[in-house]
Structure formats: structure tokens, C-alpha cells
Amino acid sequence: VAETGGGDLRMTAGGATGYIGTYNNNSLQLVQNGSAALFVDTSKNVGIGTTGPSAKLDILGADSQSATGVVHIRTSSTSLRLGGNSTYSWIQSHGSKPLYINELGNNVIINRLGGNVGIGTTSPSEKLHVGGGGNIRVDGSELYITQASSTRRPVRLHQASYKGAITLQRD
Image (cartoon, rainbow, N blue to C red; front, side):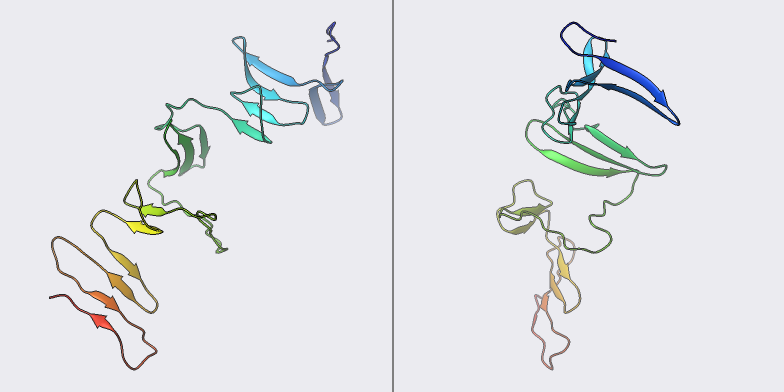
């Protein structure tokens, strides 16, 4: 099918592969109810929800999708959602499964250019800020710093390979 402005759409079948596409350096749109549902620009960038993709895959959703996400990746037993609203972005595992980042063991770098990381807080004030009652534990050579309302636990620094250990004990 050709258009006066030079655009054309071709559907062909060749062997075991069928083709739908444009020629003459034109973009391609799949339209639903008069709006582009999927857009492929002349650089082969794909847009979902946008006709101006700025990357190989550019997905645009509404800011109000903080509960459902913009991207939903599923298996038979779990799913991963990515989304955001007007103040932050998020990644969440669903199906009562933990979120593993780099489960095969390469390095993980968070905030490469600086910034703070918060656990249990939305406004970290230090490089690592643990909110919500404390509890920091590093095993291996041991470092425990715990503050719990129901029990009084020690701050403990310990190095097993030394003859002496440093233990700071609270009563």
C-alpha cells in the first residue's frame, strides 16, 4: 500500500518468515483507537506509549502507576514490576518472592557518582542510613550494632583471627 507522500507499507511472506514494514526511511506505527500503541522510528527505536522513543526501547506510562507499574515481567510463579509516580521510581518483586540483584555474584554498584542509600527510610542522611529501629549485622569477622525496644543488645566488634577481640557491651 503506497501513500502520496512517499510512505508505503508492505506485507510479504518469504519462506518461513513473514514481513510487515515500511520502506523509504519511514517510521512504523501500530494504531489502536486512533492512537499509536507501538511506534518504531527510522533509527529502529521502539516506543510504547510514545511516538518519540529516545532509546532502543522507550516505554511511557502515566505518573499515577505507582501500584501497577509501567513494565510487568512475569514467570509462572513470580513477577517483577517497574514503575514510578511524580516523585520517585521503583522496582518491586511480586508473588512473595525476594528481589535478587545480580544473583550470579558480580559486583553491584549503587550510586556510583555519590549519594546516600537508605534502608527503612525515605530520606537517608548518610552513605548508609538504616532507619526503623536499628539492627546492622555484618558476619564474617562480626560487627553487630543493634537497638531493639524489647531487648538490650550489645554493640559488638570482633575479629576472630586476633587473640584479642573488641567488645563494647551495653548493660
